[in-house]
Image (cartoon, rainbow, N blue to C red; front, side):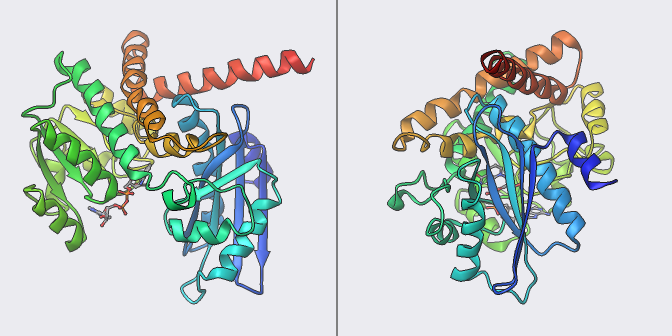
Length: 355
Ligand code: NAD
């Protein structure tokens, strides 16, 4: 598809291209929608196999950020940056500061933070060149590790689904199969264990498996996790893992996890709906991270404010389930509709006052 048609179709406001040959930097920033506030989303550094796949990634991820911030009721729009890196290029200070200058040219229309391939130390370098950085370490005045609130949001989402499915939001005695046992799964598990839920986990990393075992959590192979008899299947590793090949093995009533872009397609959501498996849309229940960084914008960071706002994911997920039941549509369609309605209503107010 032609680039401009692609951007117009997905509703993007702006796509920026930057290269700095001196440091080997090639980057895109996509601003999807700034109706609700400045575009915010992490910077992904990845060894993309083509410029086209990097472009697709930045366009898809920035759009997803618009929906995530909208449904989470925060005053941010959707944006994302991707940096195409090859294995020979070093992610050093000059490279990151050069990227910081690129972010600064947008004068705050885009706020960056961490994503796959970037960490809080990288943000410190980027921050040397631009103030438009969120998610810095607590010691630098930022909001610190996002995965704690993301884990809390996933847990609240699970509880809302539990109440809708079983009449009580207690997860005591329920079995949760965790695919991936990284930072988000770990933080969710701490809350689940406190409530005496049972967890079974898998991961490709021996370090992660060891973390699970230290908490007394039994582990299975990465292939076996799909068939584990459980109440909740929780994807916390990769995107696209809910597809025709995997969902036929699932032996659960609810799917609720932190991984981004879990559904391979909307058809999979339809399949799950027909099979009466309740799917918690990923961008709804993994919004704790963006909620956390939003709590450092405009005033000093408050962990309490962040926690209160993240706990609201329970009510948001409940509203989505209610719309899904009433309209007989998938939960992912219901979530998209609610997110779009908020943006439309704010856009209308802005138009009225402009006119
Ligand atoms: P992480 O890197 O700490 O954990 C991911 C884990 O998945 C790793 O331990 C990795 O070894 C494992 N993994 C990779 N491939 C696997 C496979 N095939 N089978 C099983 N395990 C596999 O990342 P994280 O911060 O915990 O994030 C987990 C997911 O949640 C990601 O999709 C991320 O994009 C998403 N997410 C994270 C946050 C956050 O605040 N960290 C916020 C929103 C969404």
